[in-house]
Image 1 (spheres, rainbow, N blue to C red):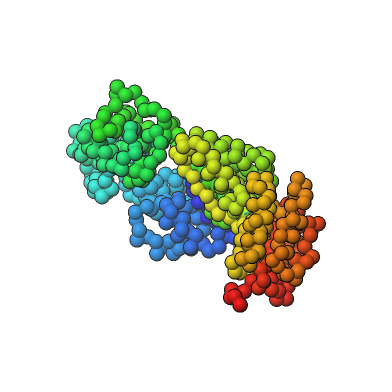
Image 2: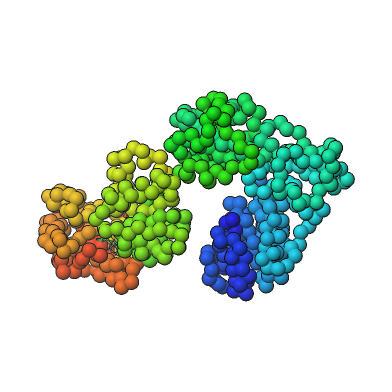
Length: 536
Ligand code: SAH
């Protein structure tokens, strides 16, 4: 379970780690100014409200009062109430506060067991029967909460109950059972059943043709034809992702899985409206059927330092199962966790890397391809789209590009605002384009009086090109035009030099340098360089 264990100070860290040991996916969130853990937050109230709003189970290691006051404004929204518990920071008390329907008492018992204390359970049905009838375990869904509440209060006031269907978690519950009871707990995938109805998530739906826009209606109609409850749906399986499938999965609130062929015995399927339904006797673990839709996210790490990496890029990395890229950048993206796989390749194998990324994502994995700076600027995003163009099957992968701070922008910021007016960005590498194209573009940019930002200025394999480029710039610019040289910006040993076009020569640059040549209006003020917003 993805618990958020929230602490305020180092005194709680020990207890937090003990709880975390029981839930390997849990992360310890700590107040940034006081203690370091897995995730840092700035303000307790805002952070806890955000977790609550996203439905994250919260274990707060502080007084119940602090948690109650922090969440008070959020309580009106009962739609997605996650479990919320307060735990004494020395581990001596466990108090379930919210989330009775989402299993807070189960969590309280487990944490109580871990910390060796009795949890402070206050729910009357739970105390009497030893379980919350309204919070069935994973794999089951309660049909109607309001009806359920009345049902439980009937039992509390002396009614007896019988159970129809298979409810293994109630075997040891202390219920007032009787064979001829009026009140019935029914565990069934059927719609319209009477009593306290709990649906096992035991139906798998196969959508044969998911390209039409009416997947939701067809699925709803198919379930209705066989009098099956939508809440008994375990998941939807299809060959490839479509917009309407994604919407259907969201509406029915079930996972979407992919398989080449129908994943169950067709002779036992119920067919209607182009949907095949398979009903099992017990809940189905949908993760064991087909695979998830793989994702491929191309991210930019920024120039190098962690603070210039966007939160979106960090989130994509945290979520990744596979990380691909040039060795230096994969290392820069790290350290990766033990459960994440790094695939490091040579810098020149971009297209091959992009294909490999699609192959992994096609198996259902969450793949991240890393570039430095911005992935769309002389980097992997274009290679990934080039690979996609060569294989239409890869459209099934969920692709996203996350921007980053490009070297020209990072260098410009260090120098002031040399890109404050119109500018252009050029790569001086003639590996993938002819040199005369480069020279022509420099000439035209020079004529247009654009500021020029040069990437890939020089390498051992391209010794003469940079001087030729400078030659071309000089045809259109004064020798005293400001030039900014940023080397390893945002990385250890960063240097920034401001010189003039007259002083510029190939000895001053290398592959790790960004070169920005000013326009006719670019000027210096103190140690800064800027290009004014106006034009003379
Ligand atoms: N996608 C990258 C650019 C890749 S091309 C980006 O958006 O920044 C590689 C070139 O970018 C290098 O030759 C150099 O000119 C420039 N560069 C990349 N990182 C740099 C850094 N930290 N400092 C200065 N220049 C850098």
